[in-house]
Length: 603
Image (cartoon, rainbow, N blue to C red; front, side, top):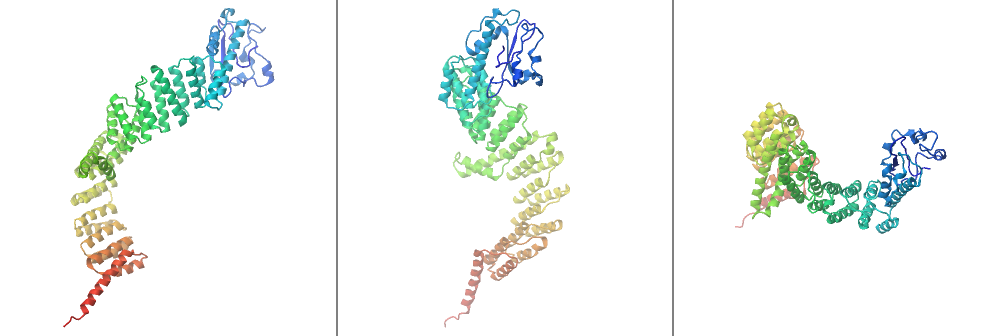
């Protein structure tokens, strides 16, 4: 009778017998047959051709449940061996002789002792495999696992080791323990395929502890045999440490490539840089990036974009730009979002300049030299970003308003207004069409630099393109005039703003009030506070506070200051204690002065 541990299908009238041993990927192997569940089906054993009156009998036809499966070969991964090699199969797995194949005639089993021995050895192989997997799928410490494996008396070979490694649902620490025991056993020589399968089996769902244990094992194997590790295996380790965010471990793996006789490829550099940047170890990431460029091993466009974005986050802008240039020369084009991120980073605001000053202080003799160096580097970065805009063309221009806005802001910050206006004209002619942000950026830069006529010309250009200047635009132009003391021109701009907007902002009036207070024209400042409500602006405590302080300290006019205090109470505003004390002190000072004038002089 055929064993219950395996299903056999025998081909009729062939020169060889084909034995199929189904492999069930579950926690327990060969312990039950899902297609022979009831007693009736188990009692009806299939009959082999040549021993039954019906030579056309087939196991597939006899099993009432086999037709429920469309393709049994796809359901169960199987080992298929010809009959003359069956003895080799058993010998490979259990380490014993196979028996004599001469007893087979014409590919039909004669029921002799030789074939019975083969069946027994297949059963023994299946049982040994099930015992190993049952042990590995259970929990226990390393010592008990090793002793249990020793008690089994196994004779190892690559097929058995690989079959264990490819079994799912085996804890990583147990697989590592099994592999360590294999190394100590000395019966089996580790191959590239075996160590690669171990790494892939553990890296799928790995824990941090198992990851470091696996790396220690790989180092031990690679140290004994230089040729046993492959680049793909080490890349799998790098990918694993990258997912775990273990940058230092990934860097250690990267530095071991040469020791293990492996050559880094594009994925090697990418996984290492990704792991280091996840841990914000950007200096090491830059060193790996430099080696990547020297080796000319750039990954695909998606990964190049991620490297550029990583380096931008770490403010390693020159390194990120170098990667971009190499990718461009190699016709590897990263995503536009990564390119936009690099352009924006190169045109960073004043905060980045402060960081550069602190960085350069240790490289120069004085703080002023550090500032000069930071300013020079800032200009270089802006012009690099400006050059990158040339690479945007076609359909990309329609959606490139953000990088163009960043470069425009950078040019205005370094006071290259000519460059900013040229870029504005370029956008008007070729796109992307400039909006409020671009115009306001240029107008703000010109106004702060005192280039008022240029600011007015840009305002007119804005209006010619059908864009209505907002309150902010008028306010920054007024501020430029106030700084230069041109209050009359500032008031003209205010009148223009009143015509275009029914509601203004507190900053609009605040700018003019400060200008009049600076010129000690307090009556005009009071008139502005009076008309603020007419344009939807409610004076706040800060406005009153600054005006009252100016009245007290410059004009010594405590009477007007007290009138403003009364208006504040009516509007529900409260003046801070220091300004109240100032008003009271000015009043007392004036009263003391008047009292001293009334005292008659001595004869």
